[in-house]
Image (cartoon, rainbow, N blue to C red; front, side, top):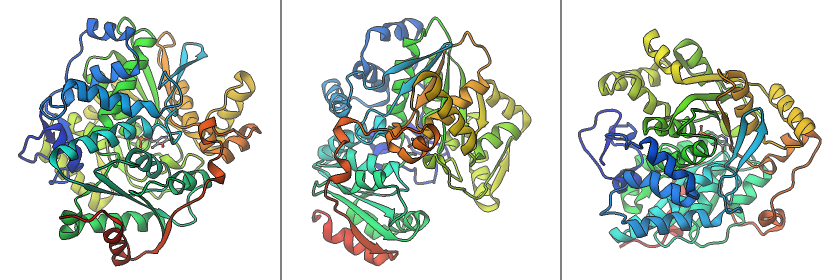
Length: 467
Ligand SMILES: *Cc1c(COP(=O)(O)O)cnc(C)c1O
């Protein structure tokens, strides 16, 4: 299998190249040149597989053998999912009425980002070691991604990781998850500035070609294909447990950057019988507005109780658009350029209708989200975090046929967002056992000014020297 860029760059790359480069050099996102296909009997056979075995089956066709052979791939997968707090990795909880909650928050940082990041760490290390290289992972975070990246990279031989976050502007749990890791290759940097300042600093470092090349900068952000690839797995895993391939399945997904739900789209392309993909958004509803009107229009971002979905642009949406445009890279490039310049674009009604055959969407503000959380606790004694609640609310609002099992993705543990959970339900959610002493662990972080040179100097001093 080879990979192509959505913007038409004339190259065909292997999985390992795509992993390391992240973004294509023409500014596009990578996609496989064809989707591997799973037949009904192939999907049926997954009923007997555990999560790790399913992961091997689903990801194998995406990864070139000469880079990662079968035993190595299985080891990487076993390594990735050994840091989860339950054997099942992604348990499915029956909510009644043919509705299910897929718990994707049993990884080290209590959010679904671990599902992919925990795999990304070992796989990056493996590919780099093979090439005899080191990489410096640099990222900006407003919360969840930073801790997931740190947990994925800690202690890895071929990686240094630097995560920038806005000083004083992330939650205590989120900060402590980043700053209490004491591996030498991990560096949490509190920037005197906002999240946007952090992002601008990271962008500027990637644009500084000599610096980027000297330190072999790399990113593990949500557009990295390897993350999508690892996320496809749990769609298969859950679907066969609720009746696929004999029955169609619907998924409800709380959505920000469109990475998680795009993995569901990929699963469907690979033959999984998915009837509906339901997109849940909070008040920052650019995606819901798109599916309602066919116009994608940037707007300001308001803070909500589901901060990991407080986005202005859904970067992975470009991958869906590439398909909706029948792989017309030129049209896609024009559209994306116009979007950057004017802050909006529209698609024809025909394209919108095609998208809506599979996708539905709904938007819930904080009050509506809290109401769902309260009801679920009152009636079923289930605590749900605000992101997961947006997903479930959308699922319930948009499901077309109640005979189709609805799997709602739970993307964070309620204890990751304790204030919002307590406000909605009156219950303070406890951290799981492995993190119960998190808030008393010693912190390590450096405070730097919002200044490119200061950050670059810091990285040069703290990274392992390069030849
Ligand atoms: C990142 C995140 C999301 C959004 O996922 P996307 O792939 O960006 O759509 C939802 N919930 C939680 C808890 C997250 O951390």
